[in-house]
Amino acid sequence: MTERRADDATRDAMDWLKTEFMQDKIGQVFTGKVTGVTGFGLFVLLDDAYVEGLVHVTSLANDYYHFDHAKHRLIGERTNKIYQLTDELKIRVARVDLDDKKIDFELADAPPSADQGKKPKDNKSRRGKKPSSKTNAKSKKGRSAKPKDKKKTKK
Image (cartoon, rainbow, N blue to C red; front, side):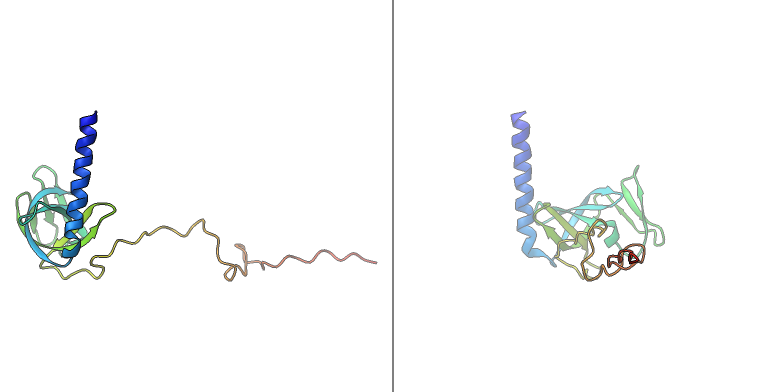
């Protein structure tokens, strides 16, 4: 049990060091080999450094890619472009996230993404949050937010 925790701590430290090493390399182009293929993208191991990152399927060329589980490859629906294990790719470092210890790549022949290097935004819903007092002029049912006058009593 102690050895397992030590191994996990070593892997965690190595992942952090790799992401820290790649932080100042955003936008640079490297060559690497595909070491893993999943339905959500390609894992690429760089030739120059022992650093692995993900080319997300959404950053691949303008096509929809199907995952072939048996042959470990992605196949373009329109172009029939195939990405499979051991393919040599030229990639560009797109994002590095030290907190999550993740490195995102994109293909070098693709145009650089607009949010290059930025941490992805949290797209949380605004539901459950109270509207500000300025926007609370009317209640949910469209009635005025002002309290109603009490019934006047006859004298």
